[in-house]
Length: 156
Image 1: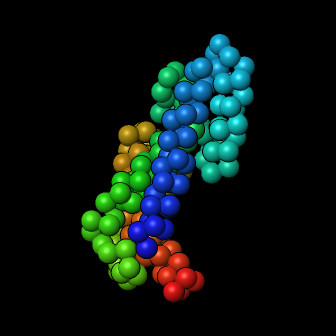
Image 2: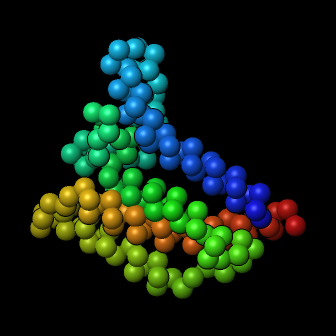
């Protein structure tokens, strides 16, 4: 399982780091069409999974990140969860936690998003990040055991 864990972790790390590369390449693209093209491609890829609204995004290098603050929080939470996962749980332990932990972890994000959607208030990027982080971190402990069990059954 360790080999598969490392493959998943490294793959996700590449995905995660590309969130930072898009604005960095956009910055370089201010003086180079090559880097501008690369940044446009990265933003296009991430647009498939995120709305990328500037007012809901963090900015680095003078450009918005490839995903919004909430998505960035989710992916940061997933990355942190994946890194600490083997310290908390054995890779060959396929038991998933009680579903209520997941539901509780999703409530802050749901409340934040819903109250903004129906116009009760306007959320802010730091809160979007935090609620996304909680959800992303928690979901790792549900997805990885299922994934590892599938791998185990396939290759046992």
